[in-house]
Image (cartoon, rainbow, N blue to C red; front, side):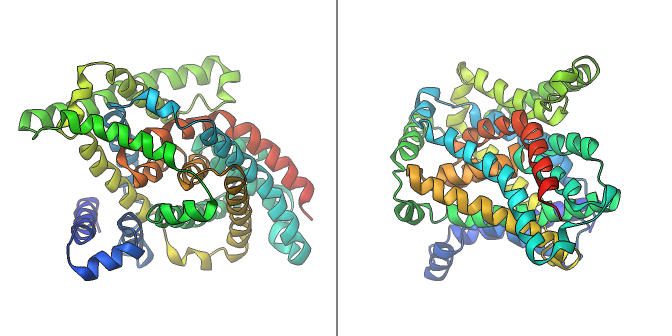
Length: 408
């Protein structure tokens, strides 16, 4: 399908899911009690790719959505940010992010070591085809993002074929975990009870911001909607313009900063869009929330979820079963450590999910997970994900060295 047809299909899927999710019919209410609507918005588009109806490698939808609609949604979400409220989230959010990054850094070498005991050929190889070299780039993107992965690719020099296979592992395993987190978001209350966690801080922030929105809510006019779009896309344009200047300058003149992936345009696009939105929250522009700014942002975010789903090929496991097994074992270690640490400090599932996705998915998906709990919480995902860019290259490098030592 061409991109216009694919875009139309995605909106039809989103409309069908969200309409049935709002239905008062007992069947749909029972169905969505077990299957979160957000998960379906992600999973159904993946079938288009799995069965060859859409070529995910050639569509331009994802680059456009991730670099235009995503930053615009971040601006509109942060218009009503209440930092006093967010400070009430406390230190557990930071601790869960730290646990996420550390578990990924240690999970890689442990997965290599464990599989080397039973199937050493899966994690062996020589020279540029040594599996640990490709897995080191996976550590970069799972702790930070694409820029960190690119940096580690230059450091460890895996072969092109190996790197292509690692990209498949990344897409399959990380999207599988994203789907699991989205499912969990629909059952967060039960998960919090099982974790023994107190989610009152998250609920307080959510309720406080929602009360502020209710106080200024009004029926939007056409002018309101145009102004909302102007603010979102105008701030996105400013972020792109500045990023196009800042990133190349750092790349040319500040190699030390480049080690922190500050030469990545996407980092600056997301960071600047968020900063602009935060700045506007101190102006009268915050009143646009009353006209539905976050609802417009939520539409953008749903389209982002659907286009991410397009990248998922459920049958991809057949192409690289050995490497995907390594990725699954690695991810299982991360998941188990996150669950264990969450129970230890009694952190709510929200912090587990957002802390994990802030590393695994970065700024593209962390706000999606946060918004799955409530749209007003999306900025928490952005702020946590930006931390990953700063540490991704260094922790990924250390992970790569440890995997080299663990390889047969």
